[in-house]
Length: 367
Image 1 (tube, rainbow, N blue to C red):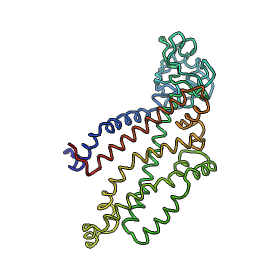
Image 2: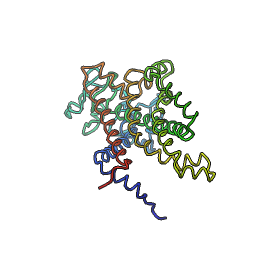
Image 3: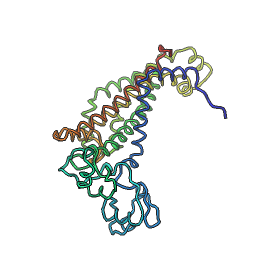
Image 4: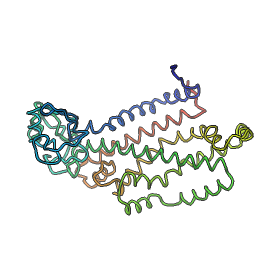
């Protein structure tokens, strides 16, 4: 099957995108980090990835095995329990992820009251002394140390950052794509039909946009039980408006073009004209806005989590980590870690957005 090549227009856009070196490399850095966090269970987890016990293979990262399988009596297995580790190591082996904590794991062996400082600066002897489970490793490595310290509930900060990055980006992507679908559809209908349809929609959007979004989000989030999809639905009620104006302007500009009038004269249906002839032109401006809308979605989620009206308690959240940093000024690693990860994420997305804007700018020509 012959390989399909890009059209000359898309080749020019790709070259313009690559010409913005900051945005090009920001895209690759963001994709690498996001890909790693997508497999967070294999990077930071309090369960082994795979293990062998008495000749049988088990995958605790996928299946919750009862403790009876490994000689215990509890319905849930704590693989960090010295008894379980001794039993498995005597009859097989375990392959652990690099970070032996999940976002909800509590380290009961921290050397100081939580929040405890990072332990990556400890010597081998100090790690073996303060973390008894780590002493079972011949090298007494960082398996049970907290590289970025713990929060006020003795949970590993690095593990919560990894999971928090993933849930923030996934939330922003779902919200941005859903908003784009609704906003583009509404703007297309307004711009194509015009007249009373456009006037009615515009008056509705003006009233809808005048509502103080943040206050309404706080009120609704305080009434409804917190959850990923509930919060997503609340924010989706208002985020789609950002796409309407751009798409509406493109359709108003193109609705009286000669090729559109010719298509109508030939009997082409409105749906076909909108989807095949007008929407591709309007999508150029929409794609340019996507990275910035994604930035705003992540920032709104972080703000709600910071105020305590976001994801359910215990969820890995960058905003919740920033709130802990505010409440625990004696533990600067909390606020610094959350700030660095959030600022890095938003900066990369802004740089990518600038490169996308250059790629779709018809005035820019690759040299």
